[in-house]
Amino acid sequence: MAPPQLPPEIVEDILLRFPPDHPAHLVRAALVCKHWSRLIAGGDFRRRYRQRHREAPVLGLVANLADTGGAARFVPTGCTFRPARTERPGYRAHDARHGRVLLNRMRAPPGQEAAEDSALAVWDPIADEQRRLPLLPRPRYVRTWNAAVLCAAAACDHLDCHREPFRVVFVGIDAKEMFAHVYSSESAAWSEATTADHPGDDQLDVALPGVLARDALYFLLHGRETRILKCDPATLEMSVVRLLRIHSYAPRIVLMTMEDGGLGFAQVDLNCTLRLWSMKIRPDGGLGADGDTRVWVISRAIDLKAQLFTPRQLPPHALGFDASPLCVVVAFADGAGVIFLKTNDGLYSFDLKSDQAVKVDMSSGFYDIIPFMSIYTPVLRVASTDEGPCA
Image (cartoon, rainbow, N blue to C red):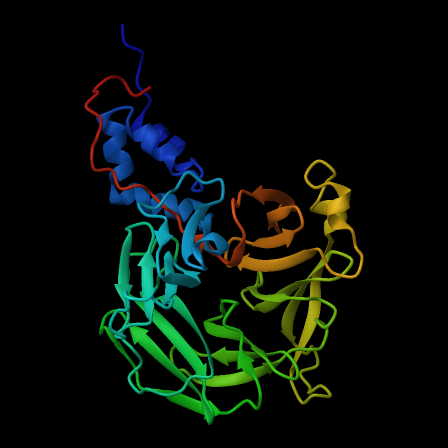
């Protein structure tokens, strides 16, 4: 006698609880029987799955590795997701957001030069599709630049939108001015340039991705002091945000989105204390000494020696605080609340919600890492032929 089957609503409730950072669990469940396979493959289940989990997990890192000459490779971070092709020969990863990765082309080897009709490309690791973007409409000498990719779909939750239209915002500085263009995947063309006054000797930090906070993009500027370039993706209006000289004792800062959606940044000082700074409006609404209504405040300070690196995770000698810092913040997974830190012992991810550290398996050295996030529900092409009980 066959065991009784579970009611469909209970089966669905169980499947909805599967963690999104291990999509292979859904694949295995789909192989149990045709009913489960049809359920998981259905659009209603995929929508409810996204609504339940709300936050896209980190599926991996797109790393510009030393052993590839700086070319990008997808590196899983404990998740079961794997792209069909993990390497992007001839391209460096530059930015990632909303299920897409922005790549910029490296110089081709001698004898393999291609026509200079594209410098940027957008890669969808889930669908394994790559679109080359045309060159900017008006050639100019670009002294420094940065760019960001983002979803262009209206009213999107940005959890699994890699199939939706996208935009690429490009900001640059030439000898005369700052300028910005936006590329639309729907028109397959760049907009005309929007310009702003030249920011002095500032240069955009091309090694650090921008961050999207409250519908504005922010990029680091380096000059006599570190500042931040703000760009509105809708209008391409640009302005410069002052950054207090509080980072002078930290070798690196990384821009981030705070829990309230505002702009912030992370730094690790010589004592291996992680500080999260948030930009706020002055409580009295007045102007500070610098003439700005905004002020930077510390939202959290975390002693990484005690909370991040336990003796089992990291031997004490690996954090020998002598003349140089041995713990550096290198990336932030926007929306996932995860910071990546590099130490003498390797690369670690640090979850700001749980204060848990996990060592990332990186088999080779890297120049840059770009976290890749999405809720991935596998596309099931072949259903199980087993019509046995789904209990």
